[in-house]
Image (tube, rainbow, N blue to C red; front, side):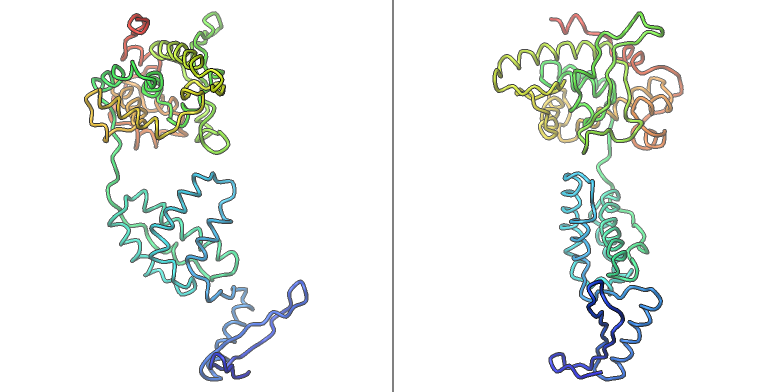
Length: 379
């Protein structure tokens, strides 16, 4: 026990062990009186004997979050890390970052979530809440804090997010017609008539497209595409069931044949600047399409189709695929398989907008919904 002149506090000090290098491990308790300093030291020693970590008193919520963002996301794509960093910088660190982690309370977490619920959609709020939970869990595992109070905070109801929509049949026909003279025609046709995700179509390779099939096989194999890749980190599809082969409606076959012709023309125009990547949907130089450029081009198509451009995105072609099939009688189980879902829950809650129970297959149903326009396309 000694008086620390620089801190103007009594300090009680004890050696609790030695490091691997033989250096003493010292724990200290400080107070205005000897009794207070001794009490704090006894609490520290009791925690050590109980196997409870001694908290890092100056370790803040911001320290925990930045440590987690830097070291706690191995294997995550840079896009995911950038997204989590942006959410943390905007919504978590300004509100909770300066708080000493051992002093953070569940009440403070509840108050913070209630404030964010007034401006964020529930889905975004759930992502934001997960940041301090995961960051504190990492700090807890490294003996920076005793418990994770954020897991005690219930998720409040956030604001209504932007609702997903589906095109009606008339709107879908208008969008298809408006896209026909654009570079995005085949992309729109496949998105709408196959329900493939936008991140699955952008890396689609010609080697995964069969426009002929094997009609003499037993059973016959129709024209199809193999959805085996996505733009996700590592090129994997979203889930294991997302790896699927989809029969092509005739209108998709026609659009892909035209796409080949267009791409060959673009290759000749680009000359030495062309970068061969074997992609079905490529830029004028052969590189993969950028998501922002696809959204921008799609909005122009929507405007030409008489729709409000700001209200529609390419992913809603997938919603429209599910809605149109359901409205024309396909059961939820078959729609779920076509969309590459693990089960019917996501299909039913998120994608399907109408329910009518009749049985049919995807390509056959789409051929019936959208009549072939082979003659028009050739013209």
